[in-house]
Image (tube, rainbow, N blue to C red; front, top):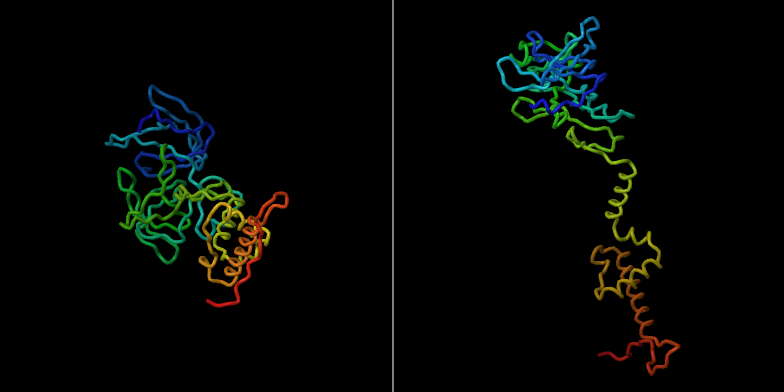
Amino acid sequence: MAEINLPPFEVGQSVELRSFESGYRGAWFQCKILKIFKKGRSLYYNVEYLDYPGEDIHTTKVFQQREGGSEKYLMIRPVFPRKFHESEVLNEEGSRGEAIVVHDSWKVGDLVDWWEDYCYWSGTVLEVRDNDSLQIELLAPPYGEGSIYEALSKDVRPSLEWSLDDGWTVPFSKDGEKRQCAKLVKHVNEGQVGGAESMGEEMQRPSDEVSAAESMEEEKQRPPDEVSVAESREEKNQRSTEKMESNDDLPLNIMESESVVAAVMDLEELIVRFGWLKGRLAPNSSEKTSWVYEDYRPSSSRM
């Protein structure tokens, strides 16, 4: 990861800081940035540990390499998104920003962070028990401290990944099923999601746009007999006249619906067409013509 791609953090901002120090590998700490500076070509932050009031100010190199590795890792990320369960996220009002929606039950293989000793330890769920507790294995060295622990479900959150390019993402669980134990969403008031879904990624439309779209969809789905009741006779006559002047075809409503109302509409349009033809054939009173218009009377004789 190139250090020229600097993280967008500021002095005074709350963040999460991870450690590669033995005894704390794989743990995330809640911190506040006090100072940002450079030494040579490297970027450094002075941070205050929020959950360790007596701890001295800590200086951390923003991009670091694990022991024995060559890849550089970003050591700081934003504060973890707000966390909800599926059964409660829809009741949240007045919130902003991204949120993480957790499935109502954990499963073996889910990647989680466990709150213990005032920091979050990353690991994997090995067992889910009936008494609302989990068996968790922390990441193996050099990525974590390893070992298996008992944890309460209330002290566990989903493990997320964050990068400068992609922001927050939810990794797949390591149980071979491509399962994600949570999803990222944006609150409805932001005009998201849907989403994004991506729990990165589903945007929801404002309520007025939703209503308009729903109204249009309902109008499309209404059968012809309901549409005809809502229209005035004058509007139907005008529409029929426009059809005759612009198109030689005669579309029939009965072809779309076999209802009685559709047949009546066809008859009314035919009547309008006859009236229109009669008006075209009738002589103009201001002009002299030898044409005489007579109403058609069917012959009394049969063929």
